[in-house]
Amino acid sequence: MARKLPRKDVVVVGLGWTGSILSYELAKQGLDVVAIERGPWRDTASDFPPGYGQDELRYGVRLDMFLRPEQETLTVRNKMSETALPIRKFSGFLPGNGVGGAGLHWNGQTWRFLPSDFKLRTHITERYGASKIPDDMTIQDWPVSYDELEPYYDRFEKLAGISGKAGNLNGKTQPGGNPFEGWRSSEYPTPPLKQNYGSALFAEAAKKMGYSPFPRPSGNISEGYTNQLGVTMGQCTYCGFCERFGCGNYSKASPQVCVLPALMRLPNFAVQTESEVTRINLDNTGKKATGVTYVDTSGEEWEQPADLVLVCAFSLFNVRLLLLSGIGTPYDPQSGKGVVGRNYAYQTTSGVSVILKDKVLNNFIATGSGGMMIDDFNGDNFDHKDLDFIGGGYIGSGQTGARPITTRPVPKGTPRWGSQWKKATAETYNRAYNIGTHGSSYSYKDCYLDLDPTYKDRFGRPLMRMTFDFHENELNMSKFLTDKTAEIMKTLDPVELTASPRKGPWNSTIYQTTHNTGGTVMGNDPKDSVVNRYCQSWDVSNVFVPGGASVFPQNAGYNPTGTVGALAYWTADAIKNRYLKNPGPLV
Image (tube, rainbow, N blue to C red; front, side, top):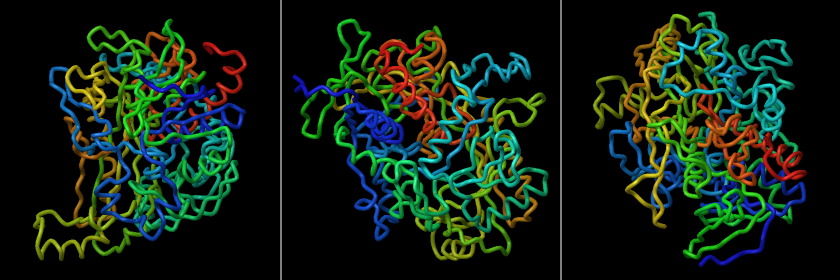
């Protein structure tokens, strides 16, 4: 029997980017807010001091900050005809564990989606005809437009101090920025990072081929900055320990750096860590949430009553919590009916590695999201009429660390160990470079999330099952992007060039990105979405799911964090200015 706690105005499930932003916004509104976080408390000063924060073995190899399968895992398969098996070690993607979530260990790449990404099905149909979209592809328009989200993109970028160069200020193209981006109401909060040699070489080569290189928008900030909450960040030192690491220099945007110092001062906010929410509780009508139930580290069960429930966990676990709580109709791929778990999508990446003849790149001088990019082949920035795919992605060159344990580039044919391997490593380390493509992942009828019929967790609840594989459209797109990348890099006359387009089947043991999207899709119709345009559940009006990329109808050719942050502010405004004045459905 769960022990009942005093009622709160708001209970927030998960304290990452969205959980911390929503908690701050609603607590500042005067509401009594409690956040419940499955993992431990993590603090910049005590957990990631520069004295040992750059520990590659602890964080980069042993994955100290990430979710353990014994805490929560899922089963995976490529096709519905296969039997899904549990993930015993997270490798293909790496969910965070603890306060800050994935916003603590990310690289810092912070993009806005293209205006056409928000009206994808309509845009493709109007430009190429409906037959251009494969029959089994389930892409759909977002229920919000770029123009509506622009002020919220701006707020998130100012919160995080994002470094970059605008390419489109109020409709006017700006030199040095991304000419393909949607309009911006203001310049980036901080200037672009300084570029390393490899990025400069890529940009020069791309420009000679007629493309438009620009600095990647970065959450590793270029200079000291104080955000709108009064929190100060430090200048990036280019140490290269970003992805999989916390930043002890306060230079990488994260909830710990940008929000929590202000949030934790509010007397009407509290956080309960190392406690897992097991279900959202509903009243006898099933139409109203009464709060949540969670279990602490001693195994004791607690009921936290609340008037408003915000589901802000990692995207995959948002989906599972709704399925376990009976909120929304589970998706059935056979009939195409149901919505919870529908339109799961991922990311389609590839790369080209080169070894240069006589150029010393100093790869260890790096940032998680520095570098030079081109967007000429992203989204629908190029004509797809005669191509065998839709979608696209950015192509970019950026040094993200070349950390010594996991980065050992050697020429083809080099032995995998011994004196020759050591000699080749020493000779190649500072001449090897990788240029990545970061492509879209569109949604399909047979890519979805549901509850596994066989495997259960430590509480006896069904694990979530993921059914996903790359489709021909995405594989063709990846080959196209990879070929374009190879063309650029051949102009540098490398000693060796290896092009690696994405190939199927998807393998959950090979890391690609942690960009899992969909499953609680937002839309204008409850027949094809779980939440409305304000991330409010169609079925239970006092449940909102602003918790990140699970509301994406499909994934664009960008990292999702910038859009996740914008949606958090969008939802916060809807709750403050609409819901609290008249609780109930907002649509």
